[in-house]
Amino acid sequence: MSFSRARRLAALTSGLALVGALAVGLAFGEQSGRDGVKVRFNAMITPNRLPRQGLAPVSVSLSGAVRSTTGGNPPFLGRMTLAFGARGGLDVRGLPICPRARLRNATHRQALTRCRGALVGHGAIVAEVPLDPEMPLVAQARVLAFNGRAAGRPAVWVHAYSSSPPVSFVLPFTLRRLRHGAYGVLLEARVARTLGRWLRLRSFQITLGRRYRRHGRLHSYLNAHCPLPPRFHSLSVPLARATFHFNPAPTLSTPILRSCRTLD
Amino acid sequence: MRGSVRLFAVVLFLVTIQVAGAARSAETTRPDYVTRLERICKPGSEATQRAVRGVRGDVQRERLREAAPKVDEAKRIFAHTVSAIGKVPRPSTDRTTLARWFRALRRETVALGRTASALRADDVARFQRAWANFIHEGNKANNVVVAFGFNYCDFKPSRFQ
Image 1: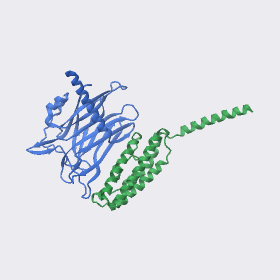
Image 2 (image 1 turned 90 degrees about the vertical axis):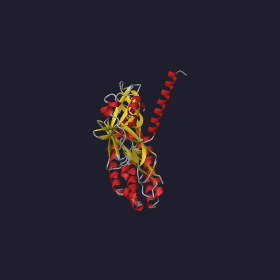
Image 3 (image 1 turned 180 degrees about the horizontal axis):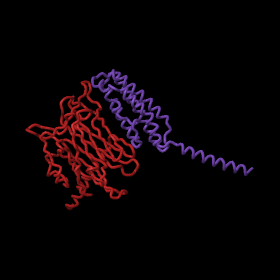
Image 4 (image 1 turned 180 degrees about the vertical axis):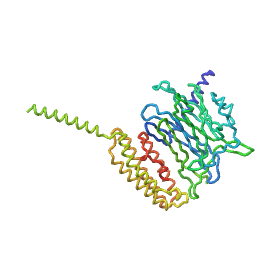
């Protein structure tokens, strides 16, 4: 087999794996819809058995998709917020920060070379380029998430890159620690401002989580616990919530409840 | 004689066309159906939220027997709402989908009843299973009618906490 053929085959295999991963990720999950738009959202936490007290390192997998129920194009996604995790569950102390400018127009490999130390997640994005509204181009981009900082607050730079069609952008998510309610962390991105008029987000799948050492001690980017009463060993609790703000309407919110299991 | 039979047939044909036309124009459309159902579901949904106030705290403090009557009341409201919306004429194009939705809603009612009975019996393991099943059935019911864009008639787990 020639080198170029082997490379094509490898690219095809990884592409299929990417689509497969997306399909698996989106096969389940909760849906909500209104005004001709349907969104699907799913969340998973790993490991699924957690201590009752004290935080344990976890990774969180979030996936979502936007569809039209009328057959046409769904409206533009203006803003997206993802809430998840426990209070005190975000730890960025000592984690390297990647300046956003270093990711601009970078390929997947360049982004990794420039900011590997700040890597906090990975995944995939499917976006539509509606040059011809009847037959829009579909870009399947691999995604890397890096630890960043915006206006003095922690942020996540989601870097997406696809070679064909050529698409590269950085979706900035601001990170907020929540003090009230069921969730501890809120990620927010102004999608329309980043993607502009030409790209429409169709679906995403991202896994966040990173373990790193600081002063010889092991830290985790995301941490969680399962604070159930003593007699309980598992209970369906709010795990995550996605809110999709479309321009001009509607706003769709999808909460996810999943079983929280204790270690004992 | 033959002339009057012919006239009768023409009149009958015209009457049939008119009746069919009237039936078509009176048929429920999906937006009308959604509006009517939302009007029925809204008071039920608000009453459910009032009925289950404090259930979360009761469960966290393991006072399951105290939570049971609240969930029982929620089940009664839920069953009553399902029965009320079941009587509303359905759009003919959505009959199959809605039949699936009503089957899912009935399963949800059963799961909510099981949750209440597990709480009454102070059986933690049974409650965990029944509650997980109730949420699962609720999500399945939602997925059937996601294109309808319900708000109050949608299953929202936050209303039961």
